[in-house]
Length: 194
Image (cartoon, rainbow, N blue to C red; front, side):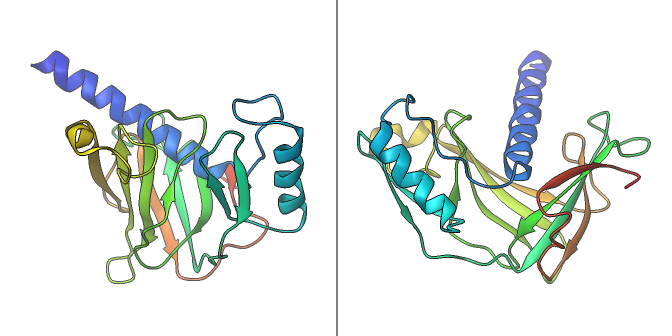
């Protein structure tokens, strides 16, 4: 039993780390023209949208992939998470990650191409508690939306709450600000002293 709990814990640690790392990476990058379901034409289409200032993309699942600029949503909050050396958040934080978020729950689904079978929904700072929330879906790249009924058992979701006085596998909430991030810290990972 302890081996199962340990395995689940290490899996959770990896997923939390990957989700946070993906969010702090910054802007969308167009897949290479040589990537699966990509070619020169749709790579060019994606690059034109990116260069025109599009920040949020809709990807249509076809082969080749098609891209469109989605309705822009403006992040109205900013979250800073502290990264510790161990999963108990002891000692001083090693880094802090600051990135844009929202002040209320949303139905947007986030998935990074580097993560298989993982997606995130409802990332926001709660105005009442000051905590940062996210729902992580394991076994789904679209927050569990398109699985046939016989596969729903394999999609598991977990609501994660980050607060200043609790630790989630080595991460702790630094602060939620209910205003957009300063442009110089937006999407950056910095040492804890900076």
